[in-house]
Length: 330
Image (cartoon, rainbow, N blue to C red):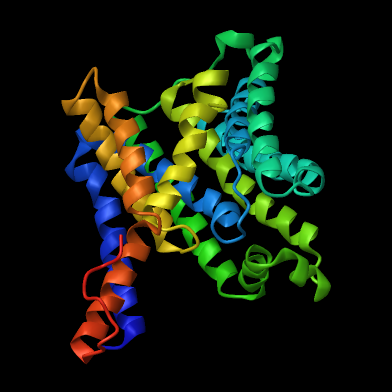
């Protein structure tokens, strides 16, 4: 069986399971929707943090911009629910890209921990601006229009919408990573000064990478805001202490700098979080803190990196390499 055939069969099986799950387990449709949101978070953060080596704590900015942009369009455009939502999602993506394009040249001129701190400040500033802006509801937030469908249909609809955003993001990044764009941002990660010496316009590529992340985060913010029905500036739209940190953690857990690593990390993180909230109520935040420590200490290369290392040691042991150690390095 050829490798392309195996990959196609695996993709078809995963797609079939994802499409059937909201109908087979309707009571978990909201949790599934949040799973796809986590996948988008991890994939988009890894464009900068994994593939390019720029650890951003401000990607949640584009998620919040998308949520508010879509809600404002739905409130003011005068269209029906679904046409207004389609227009809102489109403009949310455009607003996210515009914000990244405008801020990118200045913020991406910073490097290392200066860049990380600068992006963290963007999310904090955006939350304060939204909390003091009457046009978007001040600190009271905004209520999105009511979904016109039947009971239970809203959760299923937004589960599929977020699944579509995650699938398009995955396919787009897979295509980008396989070409010149992927090679260039990897070169920036490995040695930015050398990449510049070779004639690569690093700031341009860094800005484009941030715009790609902002595109899908804006769409995800629009969908998630409507799914919840309420947009609050600090606890949802620009929630740097939760969503902003989770993006980093999920990519690290799965394996930063890989395509499937963020997806696996998002799935493991989301399932673990739901179990903590279900069975350790009252201690769930303590358990999540310990979980983060375990991930950082025991899986520095992520799940994908750990399995690759274990497989490599195993192959060397079977081949009889005396210098190999059959036990995986943790």
